Length: 132
Image 1 (tube, rainbow, N blue to C red):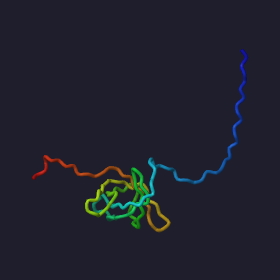
Image 2 (image 1 turned 120 degrees about the horizontal axis):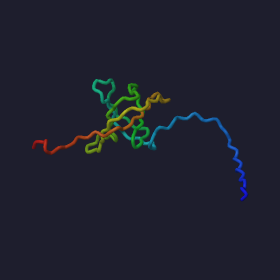
Image 3 (image 1 turned 45 degrees about the horizontal axis):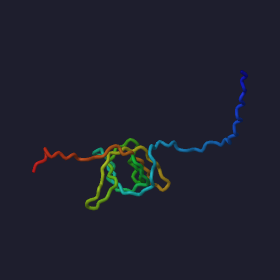
Image 4 (image 1 turned 30 degrees about the vertical axis):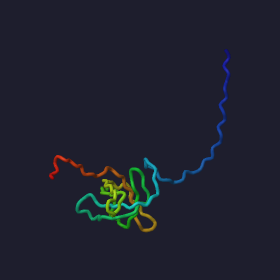
């Protein structure tokens, strides 16, 4: 038997362009540009941080990004976050423990703060321990 030689297909020329500087995307979930009110407060007693009611710039399933004039946020800082936040009676506010993952200096003089929601805070009701 005679072997037939198969010639490889000539590769199509590829245009090489210099890589554009881009941020490495670490986010696991997509984000949505949405302005929801949140309440942010420090989780460490005695912190110089204060409670703030802010509006988100964008949200994802696991995190939030908001702008603030406050400069005391830093990477690794733990926070209590109420999201979404409303002061109206009967509002379904949900509290989370969150961690600051990034702080950006924004061009408008604000700081952009990215936080990861770690866990929800909730009170467990145990009817055996309650007194009537």
